Length: 292
Length: 320
Image (cartoon, rainbow over all chains, first blue to last red; front, side, top):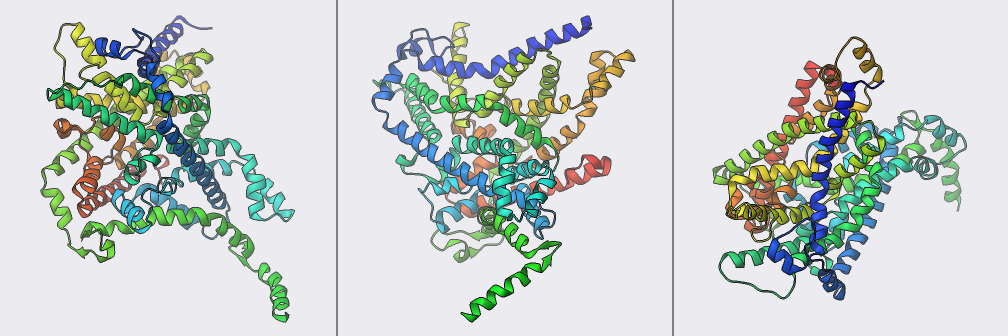
């Protein structure tokens, strides 16, 4: 069946896409390889895709004093779990009520959410609200609360709930079930795929957050993983500046490999998990692409 | 006691009442279901929207938003009189246009490539690879960029030295930055858009291609006359969203990748980084708020205008 033309196009597509795929993954592989390279080799040859001199020194140093990274893991885990749980719970309830045709606030609440996607107060009023009026500086709530609800996720869930047969809800209603009961015992279990998609999207946002950390957290003990990484990057730039101005800085720590090893430990495990669960993200893209 | 019984007796009567075709009990329960998220939206989205009045005030931390004095349009004047205004507006516009046009074109091209591949296993491997950068935070991408651009150990300078050239101090040379920023924006974001178009292409009815083939249409021609027209709705939605956000940049890209280097600020400063700097370093919340307000207002107007234009030409493709 396959014509020659089709075969050529198929092969051509594979080659081009493979090049793109390599561009996508090579930087990460280089980070991993650099973390396993002896510092002297990085100094000599620079970063490379294959470790020229294999070494686990950087990891040894991190694991001999793991307090700051463990603490950051703890903070990020707490924030991600609490934020995702809160976000999915309250967005789901909200989205379900929006699917009720007879709900008197259906239109106005939908518009309220929609409007937040078109217009926002911006950084400054939010920053002042959180720091001055809610007094949440150096509180993890400053990271958890603002990111919990997003219009995008509410509409995504609404789309999922709409695709569920209405007769199920009606039948439960006949049995005398309350709306809470219907949502928690019927709608949620029937929409685990949609809820998982939203939960993972929300979790990715919390896990990768450094922005709110930078704005609201100054206490180093509350640094998230990403913000710890950012702080580490800054200090290395400091060394580069010292070099440029002629002062030679010779630290005893293997700075570059140490930095890359921290990056691997901080980003690696969750990246792996997200990649495994990739199909849920892909589904979110698909459903989200449906207008409305 | 009697009161209590009377109250109870009244309840069923209340339940019989209906509002908008549903019982009041249902209405109340629906409202209670929405309440937690509603409160969060009011606090974290709507209060800041009213907080934009800060743009017209000389904000003092100790007097708060209400206590600070009104200054009319002074904050706006300050911004537009500054040298930064021209730079950040130009950068935001140029980068966004570049990102929208090239980003869409590349994503469509990659999606067509992906849809040509017949081997399902390979498609899933490729999908995994292209999603990888999407999962990374901008901080990790900054590590990646530093690995390439570092003066002493960077991969690019390593290559240059090997080829017998001088090292380049990337973080001090503005001329390279439009490309560097473009590259990392594409690297991180293109996989997501490619998937969006890939799904749109998969949804095209296969019989269209079959009949085109029977009519002697080559595969390449069928992209032009079937694939691209069929994904126009997706293109338009992304375009409306892109134009509405034409003054909004990804703070992570412009803050993390240039490493706050002053020497290249003329090509890496955008409205977000300017606002952030004005708020945190310069401490002029009023000016930062004014810039944020202009940005949001212009964005809203642009979305409405674009959408109206789309509605006029092909109403089924409009966003609302």
